[in-house]
Length: 262
Image (cartoon, rainbow, N blue to C red; front, side, top):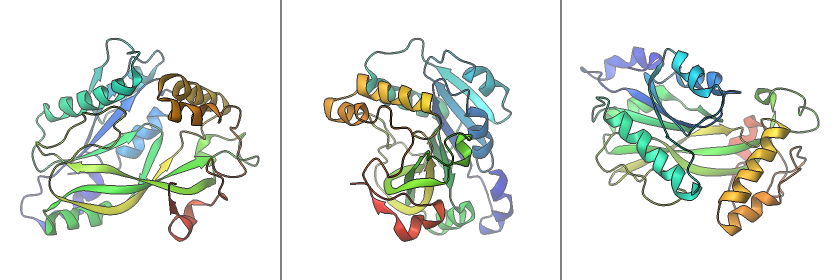
């Protein structure tokens, strides 16, 4: 069982369920150790797929005690709309082939994300409601402001009120799949989805250099409407409003002021 779930065995006579982390990474040396440490607070083991990193990401992952295996792309594919889907599918396959059981659950994150969720409630709900096969969480984008742009990204205090609802955790079933271009959310098949939990997304707020690299990546590699949006974000690392024109909020205001992404 996951480290923070060890006290929940009273809910079942055979506590066989594990939480298994899944991470797709590329050139994440600036944050991957923190991400792995955070995931290890609730995940039993972590599986990683590295998308042809050119920095120390793989070395850092190999040294982490909770990483089970690392699969790796042999080259950096030019068709990014399909590459990310393919890599997510490969990551899922490698985890399922490692001896995971039908009782296990996967937690899928990008390396620049952190979950806030009541895993105690999750364990209780899963046992009492076996029809639940996935958890959909609200993901918020953090931004750098004039006050904190000089600090490490972990000190960001403001985010946009807009959230995306994304399946972040899902039961290990034969129905899971990644099969369409730019597919972030896994296809889960039949079953119920629990709407609960929050995700901090730091991807736009790490550093000015990282922000420009992110803009370049999406502007160069993705369909025109998506690319144009990111092209317009170049040079706009520091924010006074969100990328969607709304007043920034704090993490504590997420439930009161959070709104669906337009």
